Amino acid sequence: MLTVWDDRSGSPDKARLQRMMPELAHVVKDSGRLINGIEGISFSIGSDSGWVDPPRRFVWGAPPAPPPFNPDKIKMPIEVAIFRQARERFLREAKHNYDVQLEHATQEYWARVDEQVRQFIAWVIDTPARPSPCTHFEDLAVRMQGQHRSLNLVITDGLFDCPPAVRGNFHEVLDNSKIIVLMVPTVHENPDWSEETRFRGRERDILRLFPSAVILRPYQIESLATLLEESLSTQTTGPGVRQAPLATSGPPYVPGNAMLPMLGRKAVATSSLLQHDDLLKSQVEADLRSIIKKKQMENVRLSWGTNLGECFTNQDLQEMISTRRALKVAESLKSDKSFLEIAMAAKKLPPKLRISIEDANRKALHKTWTERGIIDADGQTVAGVQAEIMIAAAIVDELQYLVERLPLDEIESLLLQANPR
Image 1 (cartoon, helix red, strand yellow):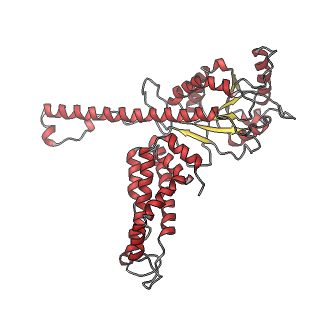
Image 2 (image 1 turned 180 degrees about the vertical axis):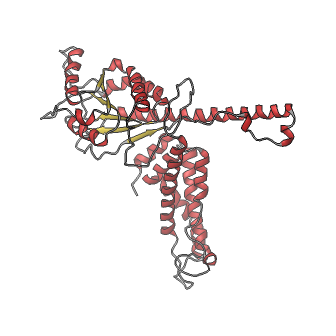
Image 3 (image 1 turned 90 degrees about the horizontal axis):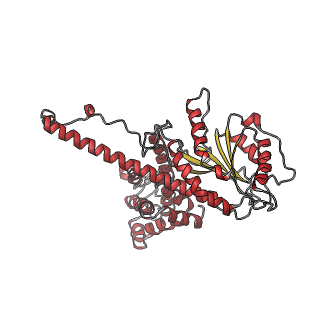
């Protein structure tokens, strides 16, 4: 995981930075064989605290890594196995199916890489609404010290313009971390000075703070790929080297396991893609179940007795159907931030896992009194259970619509307009 620290102070020249983005996108995509995603952290965020701003994650996981095709392990019917031609035809078909599935999985992987890199580039060039009047590099250094990521890319103009500008170094606490600084032009350039003079002064200030940092100028951005490869090779093979931990806030994304040589890209070892998908599935399922349960409790009254006013009746169910309440509840979730975040996460899951989540959540909150063999508040009437199922199914259908019918940028647009619930 590469951690990118982005200077949001307002002094980096975003217009000229944007011209560097195609090359940066190319480098990051080329490094997809080495990293499974990017963790983006902003610093110098206007008047807000850069210490509480949560990281943004752009995770694509690892390429598919199935075991090699092995004809000796293919199970076939006995009537096929005893005839040579039938056996060879069966194995050819099995190999063809294996290759098709692998190619499909590989295409899905690189589509994820492209989409996540696109979102990352958009995040980098985003202009802060309220830029900070100056850049507190010491706050950046303290957070880097506290989070201690092993591979860091800092995008900044290196302008130490906050009085007093602390230039003490953090060498002792950061010497186990790789720090690469991509120096970009600043909006406060002195046109009377050469570019060499402008950059050299800011580079000296950065090196006083981070003596072991590697500094890249805009025209050296292609060298980033080599630096990342060298750093990650050292991390995976060097003795006693610590891997960068993931951020503690947000859902627990865990990267995948072995990278195969796909599309001409060299193999390296990372964690298991299957593990990443399983953890993401668990997070999506738990969050979706929480929303469904909340809406079921809000819209289906508890039942504890058979008298009028003590239970959810058939008349209540008919009213729910006639007013289309379940559909209205589901449609209202298009403005629910938590639900839209679930949809964005579910969109990253393989279809098989996503479908299993949907099927598992089309269910009632309670069992009927008949199933439980007792009339109490822990059970529900038959009408109440039917109503709970209607609400669950409507919410799952809404999630399915968002994930399968809407492109990611439309969900993101809804998310920007959504209300936290």
